[in-house]
Amino acid sequence: MKIKAFLLPDCVTVDVRASDKNRLLRELAQRAAAMLHLPAEEIAAALLKREALGSTGTGGGVAIPHARVPGIGKPFGMLVRLDKAIDFDSIDGRKVDVVFLLLLPANVQGEQLNALAAVARMLRDPAVVQNVPRGRRCRALSRHHRGREDVGSVDAVGGQARRQSLLSFRGAGFSPRARNP
Image (cartoon, rainbow, N blue to C red):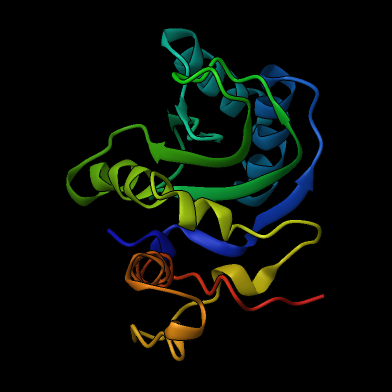
């Protein structure tokens, strides 16, 4: 499953402020609830219940909080860059400043199970994480790529590893170099 299947342009936000993990999860639940037309407390409760089982801070400054939520029919994603990194009890002890919220239907089946794996694969690459924009809202980040893997003048960006990062970022439906004010 490609990330662009469950991450809409309006679900990419930068400079989100939160003083701690609990407040961040509640804020993200509020935002998701408004888009999904579901009760925010139900989403927050599911996220906090999952987080109580063990931190979703995957390391490298990244967290992927996720939960199954009744009332949604397909995976829903939200990508957030925090204005200031917060403690997330990550496995490497580092603070988190990139968060990908993933909500899954309560009765997850088949391809939907691959959504979490797709997000984790993409965000384990430090070059991809570095390309999550800073400083302003960026709708261009999650524009659909129109089915092509054309990376243009990648050599100017630098090297094969960087090229692969851009390919995976764009293959997921992102265009990390484009910015909209």
